[in-house]
Length: 530
Image 1 (cartoon, rainbow, N blue to C red):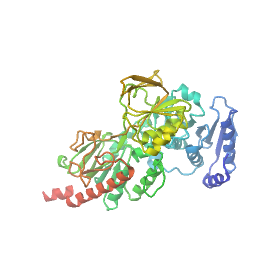
Image 2 (cartoon, rainbow, N blue to C red):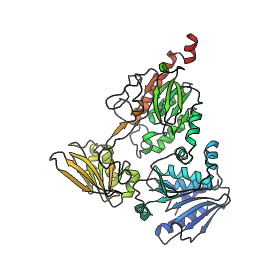
Image 3 (cartoon, one colour):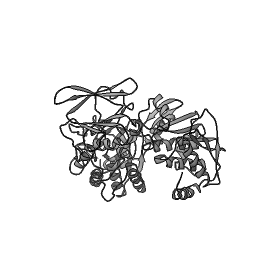
Image 4 (cartoon, one colour):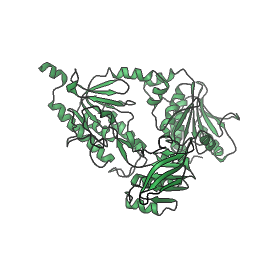
């Protein structure tokens, strides 16, 4: 199953396995089962601590491999063949089950160990999904720590009957104790906040005890990362608060226009950004959403206050908002009803779930045409619907799409409704803007690729001025209309929403904030002067 080079690399990793690990195989007569058995045999041949046991338990999914620590009673399951993006999940499961330290802080490990309710976790994934491994690995770490948590990664392509029975139209889809827990990317901290009901309250209390920052960056994407690094390099107390580190870049598969790096992926870039930010001692606070900002002139202590949805309040002498943007929705009938039931926003993640089916892509820009080309190799047919009379994508992409046999392009098409049978999408309705005629396309999936909306709603009650499109208005130094508050990246009025531009804007806003700090007395100095 594994070539010699991969075996040698894996053998090095498995040298860290110190405890007994059992690979329990539950197999059928499928080709996937044959490959899974071969994979298990290859793994066992590389470590004396790993053995393979065959189990004919008919109640188990087949084919499946369980990674078990017999001494601790932990179990991590892989239903299907854990290759592609999920091979790393398998390697980590082997290491963690075999006694290799889990890279989590002591408080998080203790929190997981103290969970006292059995959790049967099923994670439906596709092997091409770049978001799925983070979710699988988060639950697998929980299972390696606490034997009450049992996890199973399920390859949707290998278990299409279950996918259909549960109406799963997006990955990752997580079920706990048989009930839908969540869909899409989620971090370990987010998971723990949901399964441990007291976690959010405890975290808010901790945050309220934070000492004030010199620079607090709200948002952890490229702009926020750049701003934090530039601030921390000045030797001042710097913090980042974000819902998730990396922002929307985490969901970007291919990045080919980042100067000096020919090609990379969003998750890889985000990992590098986070490592760089933490190298400077920046305090990174995740799983927190900003709710409001109050200027220093309105607070009793003279600091800017950033209120969080959790109820916590963070204080800082200056703030840089870099909350980015999110995918724009169609805002038509049926879109919300069938979200994750045929309406999707990530073709690379969810495309494999529509193998052999008819789909549509809404939007004729670069993202839309790239999505159509991505889907064309998987699905039966792709229809691209563009509102305008011409496509906005690069010519090279348009030419390739027009030359692809199973891609049709319709311009002057206004999507009016998503239709379904109550469980999943069955058709899309659109109006021909030339004739006014309303038409329908029978399909199973709709991928929305129509641009971005700034994440600025949390500022609407503040004194930070927003444009008519909801973008934060800034000057040439990144300053907003509220003293001491700066902004950068896709959430601002700066044109051209690109990663490299956001990074430059983050650096500029940070330099602007530092200039503000050296010219403005600290609150204690202001009090003394008074």
